[in-house]
Image (cartoon, rainbow over all chains, first blue to last red):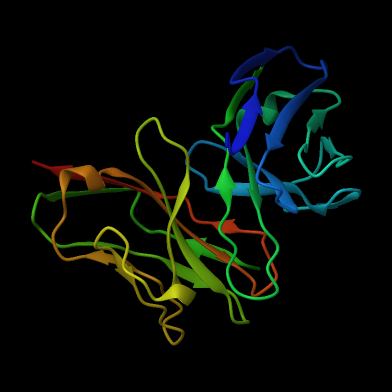
Length: 115
Length: 110
């Protein structure tokens, strides 16, 4: 199993450009999420999904869109990139259990720079 | 608001010395607490969770609800423990969303 994969690994954008960060998992996990990590800060949740067709906002959703058409894929879209979106982006997935803790499996990250 | 505080950005200890990474949380309910670790050139991965009450790689962490703390401890640090450590919590069973601290970079000096 590849686990959680993210593409691209690095990306440079100009202000106002749009792009999509790709995330895929092959573990049949229901739950997927996107986090961003800025220097000196912890990971902050952008959007998440509890299953195909279901998405919701996290702590810092502004400027980002998501969709979940399949269980495997959870792309993150930046419609009009801004320098404030320069960050490292992590995708994560976990299984849905009836109770108990949910181990999150993280992708390798995408380092995005907006000029 | 929910918050996780890791007061030490950097922590250096000598090999064989005890290590404690501090974590305090702010949440009025009953959270689930985790420690995640990122070794050099590797992905962020789960180290341990309070609900399992387990010891992983010699590390333990006890949830102290009175002090709202979840400090990570190891009696004898090893060089391979050098990594970035993040404390995180979710707001309970069935909730997957994680709130992360800012992390502590542990360096074990040979």
